[in-house]
Image 1 (cartoon, rainbow, N blue to C red):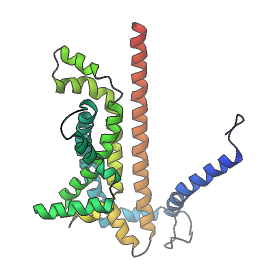
Image 2 (image 1 turned 180 degrees about the vertical axis):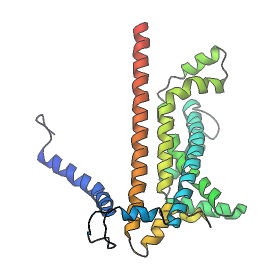
Image 3 (image 1 turned 90 degrees about the vertical axis):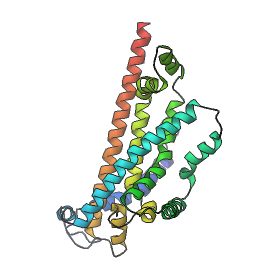
Image 4 (image 1 turned 90 degrees about the horizontal axis):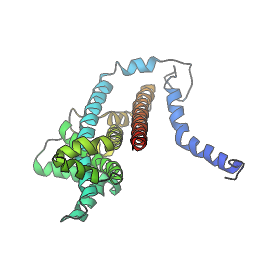
Length: 274
């Protein structure tokens, strides 16, 4: 890029990159409104397939399971991930810290097939019947590390002397965290929850290993039907799933930005008062 703006090469590269990423999604969304039963032949605009999705009990059951698993696993992962991030950010030296840090970050780099197989063997060894709760535990294990990384990056920039001052004024460590630290890192906690929720909605590999009867998720249902052929109903379901994830990401970004602006404003007012 020069002083006169982006070059033609940069613009073409940017257009090709965005086309490669988003053109297939755009085509899927467009063909979800196709009136024809043939997914590759345009037969006019119609929303009939969205109505058909809401009449398909298998899709509705899978969507309900997926939503419950995503909410529960994201909430559990947020609590555990925040505690793990607090331990790593505030306690730089304790026995086993390196091992603990590596175990927290392991799912980030480990292939999902290995994670899913390991969890399957664990559940079999302890005698857990695979189903809704094993799937929830597996998704919590998968998403916990992402929450920990997001929250830890925010905790590093928070002055620990704020907590120390609160404790000098009579707060217990837990109360100091709840009243002082948590409001400051809340945007990162919310972002971690949204990330965990999105990852749970999207997961297929680990769910295939750890789910059981009556606990089929929406990605699993879509994959099982795609193996028999793509139908307009699948395009409609995929479009709705994309919309839910996109709305969640946008909402999380808006909330985080507003809280950040409010924090900056409060800091400026406090600095001006001094």
